[in-house]
Image (cartoon, rainbow, N blue to C red; front, top):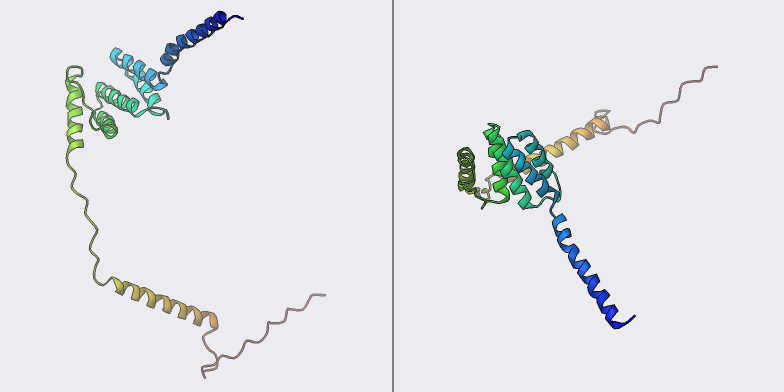
Length: 189
């Protein structure tokens, strides 16, 4: 094989490999993105039940990115508003904001109802929370609790010893040693 043929085949192989890259990149669109694109179309056409199924299909996928989930929760909120379920829409928008607090909606692209509910959730989400209480000061008298616990333990051990030991026997403070085991009953003949 001549050098020119070899170089030609190398270049041809390289061109074929490079021509496959756009196809591979087009296929790289995640299943979640495909589902959300279809859900968006279903939402716009008024098929809200189908949109919910597709959105949930995306949300349960483990490979869904944070960006996919933000989009899914945004669309979920809009579907719930269209179904006149504002409480569920608020939950969806809150989950979206938890993932991406800087998310905003474009008022020129959304309905007034969507904007009103989203803005309500966003305002509640951005409201400063009261500071958590620091460490609590120790209460005085905490060591007395341990004294009572210890005394109770000693009393329990003493009572157990008395009950298991037979409690004394002949009145002079000594207990006679136990006699052996009783003899077994006789065998029937």
